[in-house]
Amino acid sequence: MFVRAVYATGDPALLDAALRSLNSEGRDLLEERPGYRGADVFVDRELGTLLTVSWWESEKARHNSDEVMRERREALLEPFAGTMSVANYEAAVYHQVGHPRQGGGLRAARLEFDPRDADLVVDAFRASVVPRAESLPGLCRTTLLLDRERGRAVAGALFADRAALAASRAAMAGVRHEASAKAHVDVVGLEEFEVVYADVRLD
Image 1 (cartoon, rainbow, N blue to C red):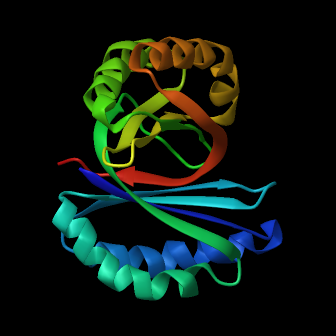
Image 2 (cartoon, rainbow, N blue to C red):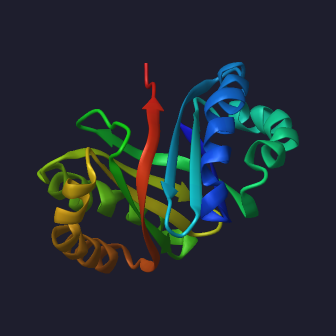
C-alpha cells in the first residue's frame, strides 16, 4: 500500500473545528476516490498538531486522488492550520494485532538513513521491532512508512489506550536503540498523538 501524510500545526483552540470538517466532508471526499483503503487521524491537543494519513492500494491511486484533495485540503483545515506539509510514503511494513479505537495513542519516530540502506531498514524493522513490539500490552499496530528516494521514514506504534502507550515508553526506547544501530538509522524526531480515528481496510 501507499500513504499520503498531512501534518498541520495551529491554534489548539481551533483544532476541533478542523476535526469536524475532516470527519464529514473530508471523509466523503476520500471515500469517493478509487483505490482508497482507509484513513487515520491523530492529534496533540495541547500543542495543536494534527496528523492525517490516507491509505491507497497503489501509487497511481494515491497520485490521482491528490489532484482533488490538493484543491480542498486548505479549506478543510481552516481556520486551524497555520502550517501544513504533505509527504508521500510506501507502506513497507503494516502489522496489525488489534483494533485501534478513538482515544488510543500513537508514537511516531521520524527516521533518516542513506537511501542505499532502504532494504536494510525494512529488514531490521521486521526482525527487531515487529516481534518485540507485538508482545507489549495494548499494541494494535506497527507500521513503517518509507520514502526510499529521500532516505526518510516514519515508524509508528499504535496502542489501544493512552495508558498502554505510556507504559511502553521504556521498552520501545530499547527497541529503537537496537534497530537504529542495526540499520544505520538516525532518529530525528519522536512524537505522541491521541487517536481520533483509525480505519484501514486491507481486504
